[in-house]
Image (cartoon, rainbow, N blue to C red; front, side, top):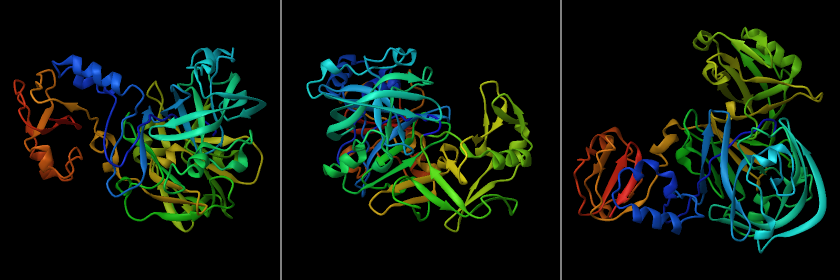
Length: 458
């Protein structure tokens, strides 16, 4: 992990779809029966919303995108469960969260693990320190039950921070590493390996779909792959060695000219890095080629240049992966445009870190069983609520309130719908949705869409 990335997490089960009502803010305004909402909220207090994926064994957790820079996801630790927002990071192996033992300013701003409240907590005397590109932490190793949605890892090694630096403004409570045990600094078994060993996942595979510009729609999936999230075939690339998610890259080119990695190099696919990071000399050359001007820690270009700058092509295992200017030029809070390339100050062999700027374009699969990575063009139809409609159950007689002008319903009983809350797949089907009358009281089962959020009404 070189720079933090945040995920917003949701779980997928193979048979039933649920979502915590506290996330369905729109529907709070549409119901007159608020007592029902309160009861459901209590019933599902520790559940993340779950999405069915027909034909797939993947346990899919939607992620929350924060300004195309961070993705955060929820896990729980302990008995009873305590919830934390963590970074799902393919660039490291440790799981750690803030603790009550930490007195650093960063810890005081985050949720801290309350060890005395967990009946399954087991501490050790082993200490460790981890340095990331964006900060560092030191802590001690402990064991407890960790849950990612419906996935449960018992007696899971994890770290509790004693000190944190550089994470004061980070909107996460810790980091969940998804790399190999080989690079673990604590010697503990990474959580994915534990899930695999305990039979919680059907295949030793996980994958990421990182959406753009939308809070919802991004997902991490465990134990399989949902083919709706990418186009065409997956292109498999062997790892340079089993130990981290690093592959051989043939070259980096622009306008048919090689601009970096001329003799071949290595590329680390890192969901914990927001940008694209490479050797200082080569990154400076790319900044020069695209006309970027240094200012403070960034390199800026005219925002008009986004429409005329060429794509930069990363060739991996003989396959070209173009990154257009619309992807490698970002906009800051002032509306100024800067490049997504950063210099790696560590002297080593030529290694590039392909972070979220690259991974938003390409669906990525991490196959630990075969020591390989699969890449395919991300499917734009997978993004947002069209794929992952927030859903709850309403009773017959629920009033469709006039507070939601974009409510539509499909006048077909749910029992007659094979896919239930799966979104319509064609424009014609979307067009068949009818505006919901604000005074309509539903007397039978219907599928209701608010915008593109799906709710079953029974």
